[in-house]
Length: 80
Image (cartoon, rainbow, N blue to C red; front, side, top):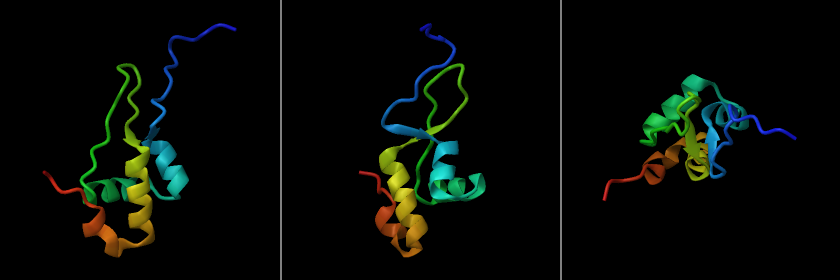
């Protein structure tokens, strides 16, 4: 079995934004709005791959916000 060096594995504790959208059943625009409200900045890992990622923990915070928008202040991380 040959390894294709062009396909890089995703970091295991992160999900692509596209995967997060599908898992949450929301659009890209809605996900971006939630990320902005929660002060979450997606990150890139691969030079050739332009995909953006969020951590599984951040995905869970977005899920909680989607289920209960009143939790926004509780879910938003405050700077130290």
